[in-house]
Image 1 (cartoon, rainbow, N blue to C red):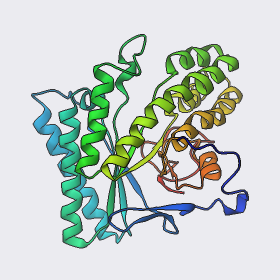
Image 2: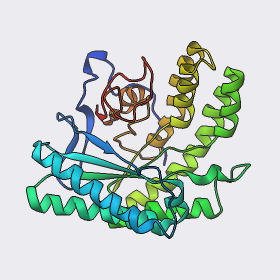
Image 3: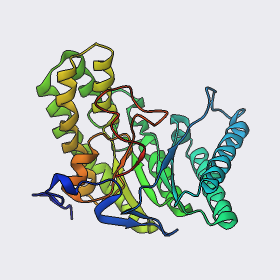
Length: 307
């Protein structure tokens, strides 16, 4: 049964501290997210290249080098632990066997470094939400839905402990709302269409997590609030309008936690401080020191770490 929030888990601003959450999350390797230690989260992708049958051997090589090099460096720097996030590219979700194989490469690399140096690590698996690749979007059935669920399920079976996504339900309407600066349409797309899709989607993700003994982590309104921010920084829409849009996204993202997500929330979810105050769960934040951070004087306030 879905949980309903009617108050704040953290009701004092002074209690919103990096590295501390009211409800910490312990991983199988012994990391306690939100237990007092701020862990780095590493996000990575491929160089500019095609992903197809011919190039996939090179893709495998890239991910193997990434996980080996990054974790070796983390161990040399005596990091207390590292969280890796694998955000699949669209082709890696559409061809689930690709995403699953790359997930295994990352998990194998994590196990090898743990055996070598004792480095603790955990993998966040974030399949790309391909459901908007058909128009109008087909959100609750079809090959894109099925392939996405397969990536979630098999990755969890292999040992990816944290399941996340940047979901897109309602985005086709929200994109129009942003270009027209229509706040009513923004609210409808996020708080009506978006929340309905979130409830359906996260009920399924939470079911997979429970069945596989892992954690539903959290969603991100990156395609909504962060799109507004980028458009504002390009002077295409007013900054004041984008600033209003971004807290509205918290209404949509909260549904994941109502359905069973326990954090850490996605790094690119700038609504996470709201979610942490409401739920008490650990959250990740990206910021000005993140190589892939969005350009914004208001958005880049932290680091890609757990808060």
